[in-house]
Image (cartoon, rainbow, N blue to C red):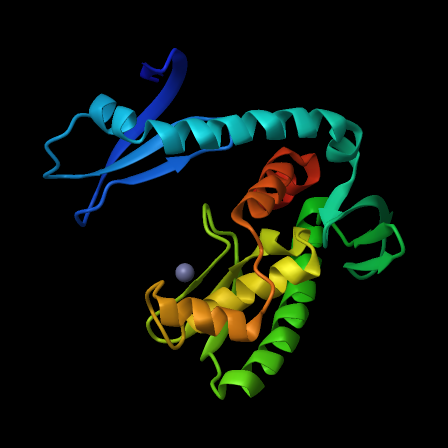
Length: 239
Ligand SMILES: [Zn+2]
């Protein structure tokens, strides 16, 4: 992987081309900078990286802090599952019928036949997240007088959710790892896109109407990092 130095810090980066005119910069949890560059862009990657030095270094510093935080959570990240903002113990039991039951600080995973723990968890968590989102959307529908066409729970690579131009909402399965207020905030964001496609002032007003408390980007990034480092989540998302 190519590297470059920004203010004496070695940065790993990858480049891909993209359609459209904007340069998109993503920073992966392992601190690799992903540059998506329009085909007709005249700048070379190193120029782009130095133009955006402040933003990139800020994000990398945050990731370094998060690495420290993950060290504190090491035992939980290895054996427990992050769910609704808490770490829960897992107890697998062979059963006639698959499913999950959550009680206090424990998830009992009833595995059936050759289904493993991660597949059973994936299906159980999908159902659980769907219930939470449908309930949230009922509340939002009353406020704005609209409804999405459909709801999908999927495993997205990057985003927490999306809203198609046809009015279908798609929410990332790993959202269920977040505290309930965060889930409602993410649903509010996608729900507001049913009315306003772009992130305009009007859009943020709609989000505020649905969910008055704003969830800061850094808190979301913290959870995203913990999910990335949580062994069980890694298995659920790659099963
Ligand atoms: Zn958006």
